[in-house]
Image 1: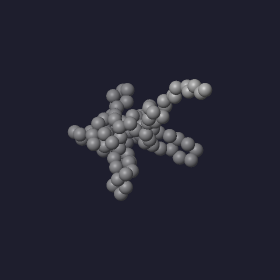
Image 2: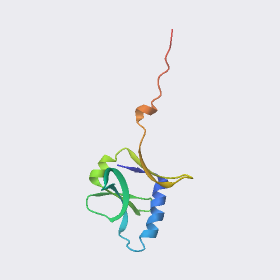
Image 3: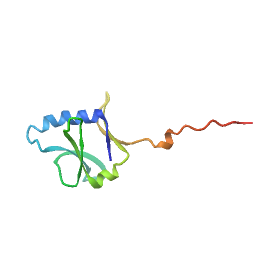
Image 4: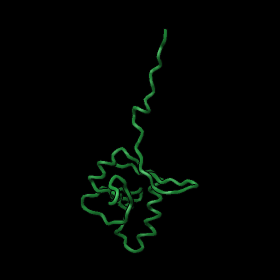
Length: 109
């Protein structure tokens, strides 16, 4: 399943506190963007039976992911980044284990 960084969880929690004033059952959902299905967005929604739920350490529901999409996001990381130019959530791939592999020293004659 998708890995959510502590920074992303904190930003989701902050945003939910603002949004849940209207409806405490509402939380964020990762969903394909309808006009561009290869892109993902975050929208407000209520939990459905087939959802995977990401909670913080306090048990607060922060993020919903449909089980089919959760399988596609396996090995991915959701983070929140703030730079001087912009800020927002990003989803990226975890580096592969092979990329982190340290080669054995080679002996040359």
